[in-house]
Amino acid sequence: MIIAQIGPFPLHAECIQGGIESSVYGLSVALGKSCRVEVFDFPRINGKDDIQAERGMTIHRYRNSGRHNEDAAARCQEIVEDILASKADYYHIHGTGLLS
Image 1 (cartoon, rainbow, N blue to C red):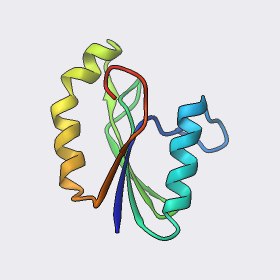
Image 2: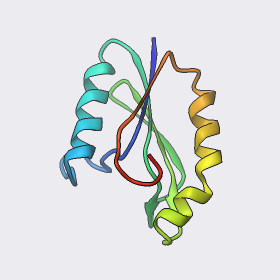
Image 3: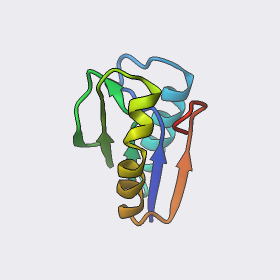
């Protein structure tokens, strides 16, 4: 089974920035023990486009040039295409911002 988790995912498990990050992280780690988990992190200022494998998860990261929601919204179509390409059985979007 493939589960797509969409939402802010911590850059480092040792430094989780907030409640939504911790929720996405905890659920992804737990699900990764029995399922294939594809995590789609929200664009981050000074981030980079990258794909990482970690603890039964594949983490898709996106950069943001610094215009916060405007830049994230401009990349929305690309991110949605990546999410749909995962062909997940379940999609879980977790967040409260414009991109969510």
